[in-house]
Image (cartoon, rainbow, N blue to C red; front, side, top):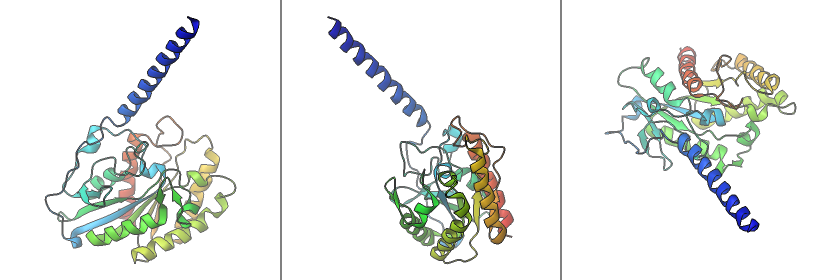
Length: 277
């Protein structure tokens, strides 16, 4: 009898835990758009400004997507898994479906719209993969089923097919924030961004680098990565660092919360407007 009771209790515990996990997953994806929306027409490529979103999880996005993040604009476009043009709704990244959430892309696009000619559309191309180090990008490693640099090149080709490549939004460094990799970070940025621009065919392509947040459990190392970014930007007049010191994490000391992601997108747009002058 005791064995039967134990088995029943174990089964109940399993069901409760499984239901709780599913409820959490459902909450995370509650406001994800259910339907892709296609543009009524694809604009002339001369009138499409393309931006690549690259890096690791804070660019891929881990914030909670809310209804306001899924309201599309006919002038802000992105791509789906098949590389087809669709209207941009958060989340934009699709490489890690069990993890991905709100990123800064749509906020960037909305902010930029008010500063570009009325006949210009914005195309956002996602390439970020959570947890990826800069060495893995340089080495074209396959990480979380994505061949990082190869995927970047493929997405740049899509960018060239549909519009004019105007810049790269980069947020990465958490995976390199350790004593071994910190001293090499600026040099590795130089190598990687040289390759990015070579693929883009534009030596002066603007690159906006987002700082790591100020809330880490290993804050000292994260701040050292930020210093490396600033060192790089000081010698590259076509790069600019985006500040994040006042942004808040979502409760894990790693990822920006939703409000932080929206503010980050605005700041990337403001940084681009400064650097493109």
